[in-house]
Each structure stands twice: as structure tokens, then as C-alpha cells.
Image (tube, rainbow, N blue to C red; front, side, top):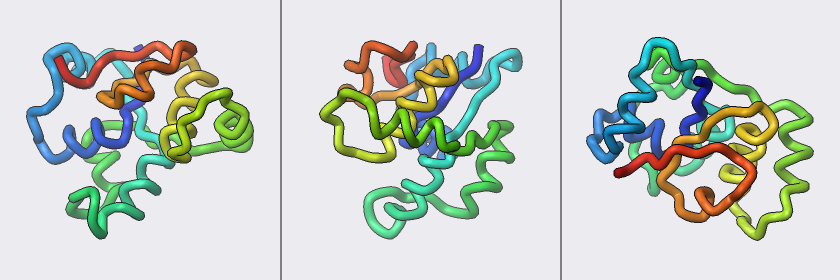
Length: 127
């Protein structure tokens, strides 16, 4: 299964925070699953780490150290993110949803607004 971690899921995983449910933890840990972190998440953390998100160290190194794959945002992702018929104004969340939808990835998130989006396979991050 190809997974895409929402920003907070990546932060929790990297920080060893046990806020993730058993299903999410098992899927992320499974050797046969490919796990992606969006460039949008890295951008979001880089912007918000001054106050709203605590993250130590270099982000790109953390993606690699966790055995995850970086997922770049290409022009098709950007176009879809802008075209989503969705009232969610957060540009980072819009990009992550667009990438999951366009690329057929299963999104792991705890964001209830994102989980209401019908066009993406999702796994709740928390039990």
C-alpha cells in the first residue's frame, strides 16, 4: 500500500509521540508499504516551526532517516489543489489531499475536515 502522511502524523512519528493509533502505526511500520511525506508538509513545518509546530533538526534528513520518500508537488498537483471544490482554505491540506487523490495514495490523518473529503482513501491516525 502506498501511504501519504499528513503533516501532523509525520511530526508525531518523527518525534516518537504515541498519539498514533495501532492501525496507523502498523501501516507506517509495515515493510511492504511505501510511505510518502509531501513537500507541502515540509514547507508547512518550516513555516510553522517558529511557533505552532515543534520540530527539531533538518526536515529532509528526518524524512530519509524514517525511511520515507519525499513527494514533490508538481504542476498537476498544484492545479488540482486549486480546483478542489472544497471550502477548506488551508493550502497545505489542499495540496496533500490533491496529491493523495491524484496519485491514488492512502492518506493517514487525524484532521476531521480532511477526513470528510470523499475522494481519497484515508486511514484515521488515531484510534
